Image (cartoon, rainbow, N blue to C red):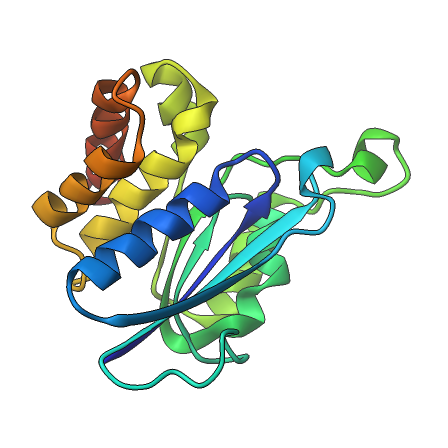
Length: 196
């Protein structure tokens, strides 16, 4: 069994916690896991990309080669578009549709593409995908900081690799008890967004 996952977004969206949760889940199930992050100017809203490679055999490289990702988890639409070349044609993408404009967009020096253009480009690579407003759902639950957990819930419902109850047990170990109840609700809401 081999599973390659790309998680992409911008600094502050919780990409790294999501990658830790997935890696811990896979290791708990007895799989080998190798991961790496490209962080850049993450503290200033820069690009953050996590590569996760999961296998029941040896793993020889930490980065996911182009065209081989089974899952692309996009925390931000343009970041998903930037990394869509990693996805294999049978792969699944889950995209949070709420945009985070770059500094250049905010200054009027660059133009953010229309969501329709982004989705069309994603669908050119793979017809297996979901576009959800995970950030909006997280805010409804008490804070955009839970966007990552909403997306993890969505992920858990589109891949047979992830068992809901086992994933929840992993989250209970890595999320602070003070905010755990809200985050578990966010996880379930992510699953519900895919179901609807």
